[in-house]
Image (tube, rainbow, N blue to C red):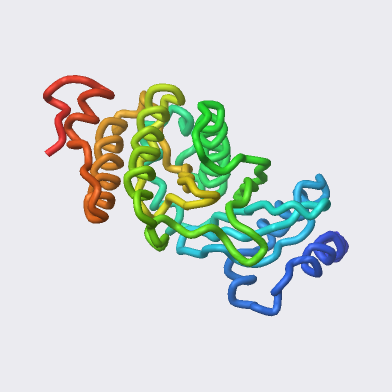
Length: 263
């Protein structure tokens, strides 16, 4: 029975392996497309969500992002989280205190599946608040599919790599302050890791990405994460010559009270 099951499994995966472009790069392929992940991708293909996996957009120790295309040739982005001990440990700080993870911690697979679902929900909440983030499309296990920011030649640049034109720094700073405020007030979320490393510039405006670690305003670490986001954005734009609003003023306006002032 085991041999039959394995043969059936290989037959199911054969169409997927043929449709992953650049699969000759065995290092990237083997790093991210383990059997469990391949089954999740195959499920997304059967559902008509994606048709091909084209090329890696970004890779890191916790996972990678790949450009995909739909059956009607529209571009999408596919984020794959590694199911590993290292990834699991890096999520622990944000998981603790989040009511959405009660009863899940302690199991790698279940935790990362819940983490992917959490990013899907965070993106939905931010999108419903009319904020500029990738649009979430679908998720399976450790795989998340969302809108793609870029074109066929590659992804849109990160803010850290973008060559700012005259006046753009001030505009982008205002956009990101508005994002922080609206996310907190309207979506009841704090990004928790906002910086020039997870903001993309696409079609002349900023888009915030990597929203999986976002916490609700009920999280016990919410205020500290909010503080860190403001300080990070201020530091970057101050280095670009922008006259930034003092972080303590922004934080006081959002959550009130002198005791919450930022130094």
